[in-house]
Image 1 (cartoon, chains in turn brown, cyan):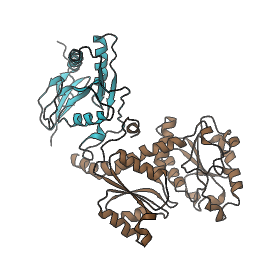
Image 2: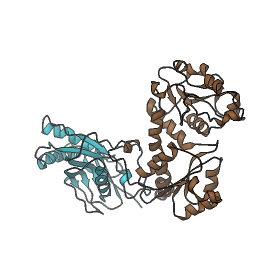
Image 3: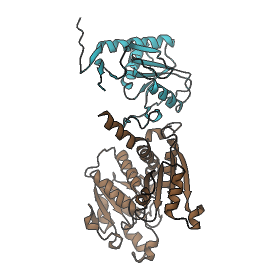
Image 4: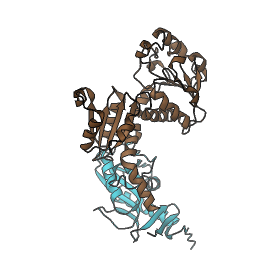
Length: 291
Length: 180
């Protein structure tokens, strides 16, 4: 799919006649736009649902909204919601395919696919055996962290979570990770530094005493960045909080993959849409027949 | 008289040297048809056609010294009309690192069968530019066309049953009857 995006005309007819709806109950720039771009490059029809101008404002329930759109004959919903489990719940109400584009603090699977692909591409690796990945920031509320821990671990990487104890989930000992509380300590032994966005409302909840203190201890500053190995890469799922977790302009980092992540977002989501809409059940049934 | 023919499970209809000679002849025909191949580019179809395009490029360079014919590859899986009905070969990519606008594009594939792959290739080629003309070279034309497509250069016409499998490699062409 990445190759298609490099063509003079980056569009193929693979998903002609399929309709993809982006159902975003939460704000998003890159995930929604990259899904819509991905769908268009595969020639699928796209519909965009935005809560602020929909009948949700008239009190329409989630179920009625989904069933209404489903009745229009759509093939896939791309769903983002502030509550965990909403994509699964929607899948019970429609026969269309559901793609999770982030549900609460639960999972953001396509982001993890993008990130793993980006690392593999940048480092020229297939498996990530032994690669040391450090994920820094608000692990507790981060769906990106959850999906990335699962994905990087699956590919053989060793994940270290770096956060103050208040921003770690309660059941952290059941995760397949190491935990550190000092970013300075892990910097020299990190191959992939993954910075998470600190949501500003976390401070209001009393989980961090002071934004400046958090920023001092867990932010990526220029002096701290110098502790990275020359080969280490820096990632961020966006949107960045400049001056909080990112003090340094990523353009000043020699090995920032942040722009790559966005660019690869389209390719990876094309692969997901293609897999769901063109390769899924039909292929399996065909293979079973031919065996 | 040392005709070594490797028999897999099926029937060998061309030996390795047969295939090699067919490629040489097609190279000559391409040069002849295009009065020297100066405006010709080769595009091998993933995956069976790419190695043949590579060999054609080598042979043309031998026939016309100093002439390096640009040689690319095209993966048509996203342009097929049977998406979802058959498996997609992962990892095959299109790589056409030259301008095809105004060029004579010779599409190269191993076997011409229904013509659907070639139709998809013609569509895919559009995304890269507007060639002056498109020609088609195949090692085996096995018949059973479902679209109005004909080859310009053929290694060998081989009549087949519709459920035969035809396999082309440097070792030759093997036809296997598949029980259905």
